[in-house]
Length: 114
Length: 115
Image 1 (cartoon, chains in turn brown, green):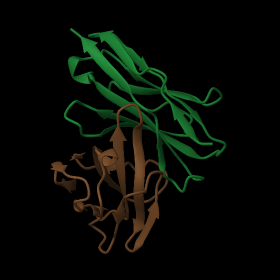
Image 2 (cartoon, chains in turn red, brown):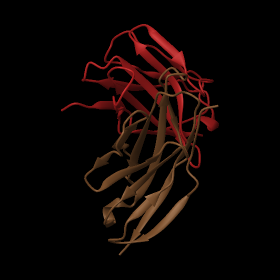
Image 3 (cartoon, one colour):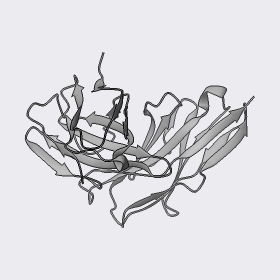
Image 4 (cartoon, chains in turn brown, green):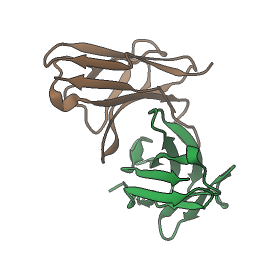
């Protein structure tokens, strides 16, 4: 089944404890992206990647890191999480850039930072 | 600046009635795409419908249609014969070349279908 898989789905952590949210897609998509969703703000892009070894900042990159060493994987790293990073996180991928190429989303990862 | 506005934070609609969810956009790019996604309470993001700026006809997908009014810069989602399962958050998004093909999202509309 074509899908984007995120792990963990739920995580409660404490301020300053490094964590990684993994994202993997099995559709051979070039493009991958991370979003965070907060009430009343819609989805805001954190980082995106057009292809392997090519990453760019989105609208809210502060406090996050990413890497794209392989086409299928795009992990999101929080080096020193803070409570304002408590959010619902989505990884998404698509093939190509233009037209009706639709983003396929992972199921989401709900992160709470105490 | 590129922007998507969804002016209805929440809506209540009677089951079986048609629903229109508003979306207005702002861009100076002549080439853009408009998307609608549904997010049920379970949290996943489900693609509903797409409209390209050069498409001559309004997009339709089953019970979903997109009322695309280019001059007014609006891309309203119409759901015909609403069902209880349509209760969800609905997001409008726009992709433009100027933003390096990234999606710009609206804040969403929470739709509740009443039995």
